Image 1 (tube, helix red, strand yellow):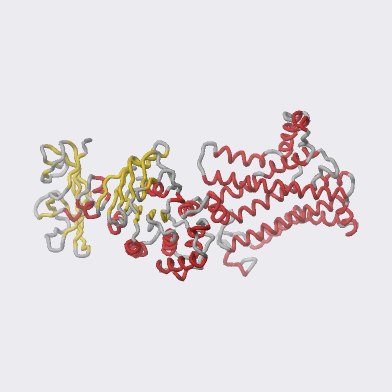
Image 2: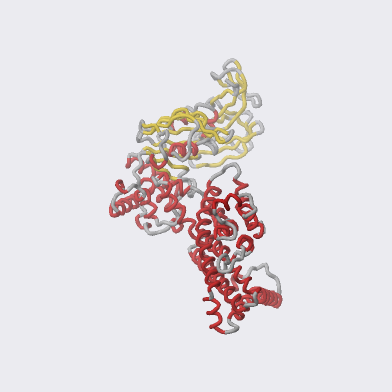
Length: 287
Length: 344
């Protein structure tokens, strides 16, 4: 009857395929997953360790690599909190209030997801670059934005802005505002309402959004590539460093950094799974 | 706590939620706001709590104007329609909330808060639920938690929005009696919103009937029932039969049915006659009523008649004459109330 006797009860009654068809489909899915997802991941680590552990360690303590890792962490450390606060504020406005232009705001929040990352980087160059609108003025003031840390942060913030807001908007809309109103009638101040009622209700959704935001902030390539200027040891984030090393035929170096980024992705996935498991166990819905 | 409302107005876009509402509620009174959905009763409650604001008009609670007084400073207990319990807190923490958010100087000690919560939960008869979460208790229990939470801040004024709306009939009946008793014991002033006229009539000292943002009548349940101010109130307060008629020279004449005229003080013009099923008398002999069915309904008999194209239900006392199915009979409508349809 069923492939897994233990869960026979949950088999939908509407499936009429013969067991052979079912098995065939399952095998096909697993094969596709293995080739498209698992194999590349394995390749990354196999290539990184092709010349042994020593080579990996050497690639990691190489000054340019260390600088790239540091820079990536700094960019994420600034842009993720910024987008957490910004995303919360945006979700709060959109989830709680009706105002003219609300639909437009929702669309704007999603803009970075639909715009090519290259364009997301380019707009900052056009704004703050040497020949950009504000470039000459900034130049005279001695402020450097493009080809420097501020540019990298701006591009990253732009690209990763939607993640927190988009996770929270449907959640806050579904929960409604009556709990907050109840808190107000009980004498709570605005801050108390936020800390004691709003935040606890959205904490898992918020954490989920922050995780996604962080993963993208560390992994962003396109937008960052445009504003970076590719100064080794200065404006190279990890993804840019991977490309540079790869172009230098430094395979171990490239795959070592790539492996580090992949590890980050795996950790993010594991945390996300743990979160979903936890929320699911409490009987609540994350999204 | 005395509550006075003067000419409250509030509009959402072009629709008026409150269209000149004036009302005075005495301290210790239990007042029901009764009306169909969209009549503005919930708007009125929210405005009182400070969750919404009026466009014009004045609200006084205990003689103090509420203008510029924020919701959290009003000290008004509010029980929401779907309770709005804090879902991530236990029952005890829910009830303690109003005390825990007080500024440090006014906040009771943790031990005092615990004691107050315990005594409130005991008062509500849910002392054993303190450690549960809202999603682990029944609707009736949630209702009690919501009430305990609102009462924890010792409000002088308690506002309830459709407090029994989400409960099944039996729980509802018990809670009504219990809530009214609680109100009397705690010396509260209570205003509650409902669309269920039986609920309003059973619990309240006075009932305010609302329609389209206006108060149609405020009276005790007895007087409201005996002397409805207009056809809307009459029809809203229970089962009623409606017959069209026209008034001329102080007499209402039924155009479509051969029934006796009724004396009235209404002005000349089109009118309607409203009569409750138990106010109609049935007489033997030829007449316009064609009996469709006769059923025993407790000590009464419920007779369904076809009368000029509409079906009319009549409740007859046990000891009166009763027709049999298929018979024709005459109707005595002398107890009907006539309301003029002519615009005043």
